[in-house]
Amino acid sequence: MKRTLFLAIFCLLMVSALAPSRLIAEKPNFVVIFCDDLGYGDLGCFGHPSIRTPHLDRMAVEGQRWTNFYVGASVCTPSRAALLTGRLPVRNGMMSARRRVLFPDSKGGLQKSEVTIAECLKAVGYATAAVGKWHLGHLPEYLPVAHGFDSYWGIPYSNDMDARRGFPNYRQAGRKDPNYVAPIEQYQVPIMEGTKVIERPANQHTLTGRYTEKAVEFIRASKDKPFFLYLAHSLPHIPLYAGKDHRGKSRRGIYGDVIEEIDAGVGRILTTLKELKIDEKTLVVFTSDNGPWLPFNTHGGSAGLLREGKGTTFEGGMREPTLFRWPGKMKPGVQMEMGTTMDLLPTFCSLAGAKTPGDRTLDGFDLSSVLLGKEAKGPRDRVYYWREEKLYAIRVGAWKAHFITQGCYGIGEKKTEHATPQLYNLEHDPSEKYNVAGNHPDVVKKLVAAADEHRKSIKPVADQLIRR
Image 1: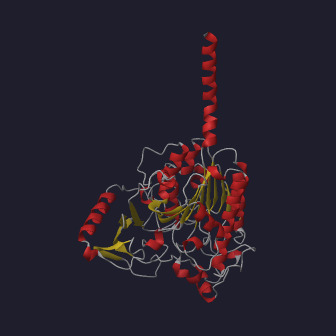
Image 2: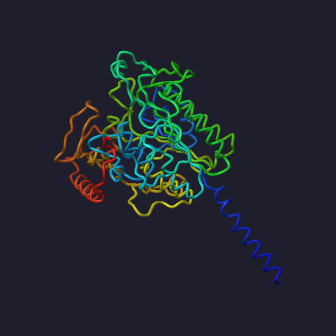
């Protein structure tokens, strides 16, 4: 009897001792590949006729292609803050009416009080790495290693910053030559490793390829434990650069060369996961920070059938081409439920058994039940379209109301505040061509009330995008 009891207790202790490592081994890996200024219509699987994206097309076939997936803002800095914190950037000072993004002379950044995906996952044993464009503060206290990432390699802000005088205006040069590539020396943007500058100016011809190399190195080094990789490409934001193996290969010109090189990098990552036999343990997400930069003509991308692009709260500015892939776990297909980048934090936490921050408002929802096919209906029924520090529009179900409309960076329509909001049925009219507010006053009233209620949840915070 005593021997039996002893063996039972011993087995229980052994199981308890092994449980944490076994649980860690069962946790999925997460890879987020985040482009910069990629348009809704720029991938083959989203309808582009002359850009070849075979690896992303394969992701779409093997995984899920989300057709109603949004970002938290239509420009770089606030959009990235939204993804990493699961919160609208207007809640944490990363959205400003004076400066829309951070610059090399900015004194602020993502505050330490914010909790990122990396911090949530690190708390339950994940290795974490950020590779690529950060743009949430270039000073040491704001860099990725201060926000839960074990390592960082990339550029601290946009690839067109730190520009030197005496070179051709990129926009004018690009209009004259659709394949124009600026000299490396024109943009003195640095490459950083951790908190140190290791190269300046960055050789942007090789940057996309080096991002992929760093990503693959991290995956190989972390294959025996759960990991989170945030790979944020600095392209196709202008200026456009492509590596020697891709330059001049696309029918779409230099812009297509850039997209096809990013696609090749995705292929390398997927191949690496398969070689290491961790393919079925890894959820890969591909999307973009905002829509295409339309004023740059052929050097900018395409929003496909969506209206407008980067900088605006029309669909082309904030609805992004998005793919999820997790072999053996997800049922492949087209997903028309709504999702946003802010949903990634609660979704990853749910799948990893990590806690979400309970002391603040989160704007994300757990999409895991939809991704895994447990529920057909997603938890998100609305999207808020903030620009600067004002709510420009809201979507509830199929309906979208515009309270304020404005074009992008000096092109398109002037800023207009509408006494009667414009109303579009995005399921019937994703291009936002037909204002049907006069036919549906009850819907307009409902959306106005929803917007008013949402605005009450926004508390004033310090602007982080101000100059030093």
